[in-house]
Length: 161
Image 1: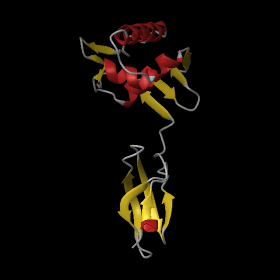
Image 2: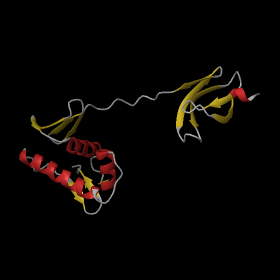
Image 3: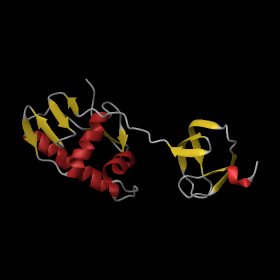
Image 4: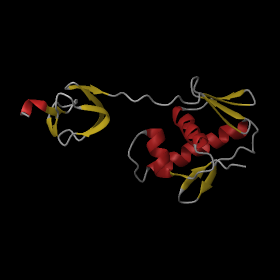
């Protein structure tokens, strides 16, 4: 066995400590590269390496909560067939809350999922303001029974009844 038969990282092409023989077969092998610090799912057949592309499971295109419907494809929210005009952050917040009905989502979780940035102290205010605007838009639709509830100092949730 010589150095030419070492498994290479498919991302940075660095040699790994794994040696391959001509009859080695790997399927869905999680290869971690210590140089680029990435893990890649690979298949190996006849000394050839193939990256396995994992397909995301199909996402439900519509979510429902009480008489509110959120459409992911159209990025719209309707309450009794009345459309709400939401900003991107408001839509993302509502989507994440509807996916996790009954679960308290922390300020940090909400910020990471909706703003795609690292959480800092000022993010708390941004989340509270977005929730306040979202609550006001739901109230305009005369749906007081749809409530985004707060767990003081922790985060927000949609109650399951």
